[in-house]
Image (cartoon, rainbow, N blue to C red; front, side, top):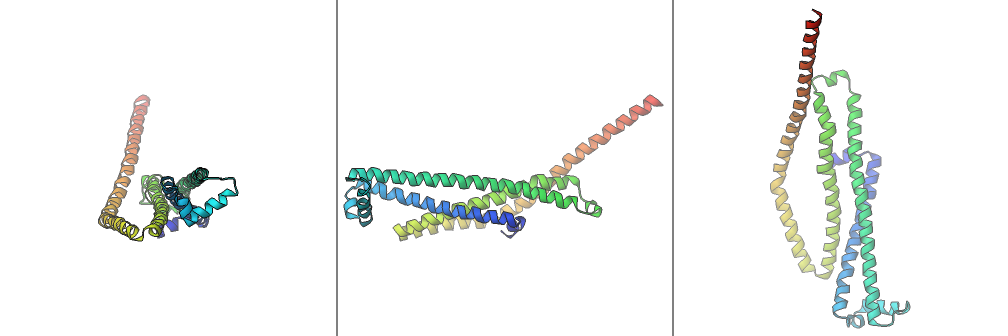
Length: 243
């Protein structure tokens, strides 16, 4: 988290803050959407709740001033309300997803640009002992790994965690024991999986970094060697022609 935060400048951190706020609103809208479907389905199966349930009866009395005359019309209006809430939730979710993808792709450009600028401003002594293929690999490949395997999953983790927390909070209100049981069980499973694979992933990440470096170096040296061979052959041809 500290490394990713360090990669962002002040403007990008503000954008990340706005994006996180949008993700929070999206989670709340998802919760409202889920919360609106369950009562609607219950009322459809048992219309008598309109008279017995305090909240539904209050909504029914208010809807009378809008032209609703009976239970059937109230159910129709309630269905349109649920549908409208779902449309708002999905629309806002689509907008948030768009800005999330845009933010991630801009980090790919921004970090690569920053690396190129810092590399070009280094003194000559800094380039001695460093292979240009390794520098190109860092700019073109490793930055993509950081964005694709760290920043994007982190945003997905935050977004889905907020939605999960909001829905769990809703379930706790509806059935605390069942919600805590299911939440703790799933949370424990994820924690156990993460505990056993984190070192494996870290080891594979280091191996992948070295392998990627060797891959770029080998390709660069292959083309360099081919160029030297062709230049050597060309020089020999000129020698034979003129001498």
